[in-house]
Image 1: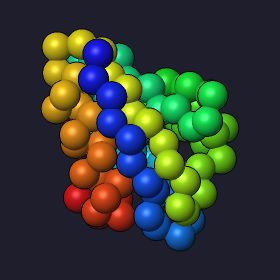
Image 2 (image 1 turned 180 degrees about the vertical axis):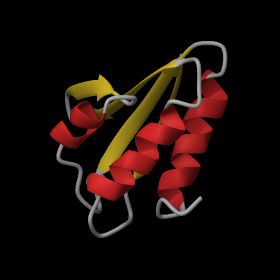
Image 3 (image 1 turned 90 degrees about the horizontal axis):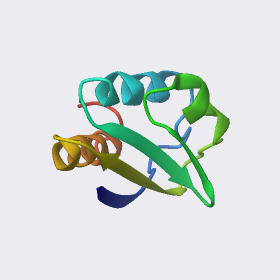
Image 4 (image 1 turned 90 degrees about the vertical axis):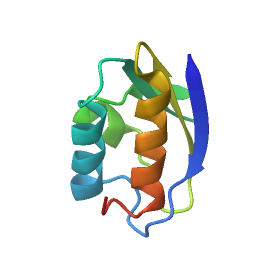
Length: 87
């Protein structure tokens, strides 16, 4: 299992278009991936799940992966967020 914390920097947070980019990137990996905000954890490959967290700009989230490419998956998703979803 590999975990990383990241602050969502863009103003709109993880909604609509950014969430779609995030899910598309998550689905490139074989590992199981979750996004955690506060005490809630959802499947990072589920648009409805990610949107249900209501992640706004400035929110700290955790990205957790478990599987063969877990570190690459988490690092890629963190980079996507850090780059404002323009990777």
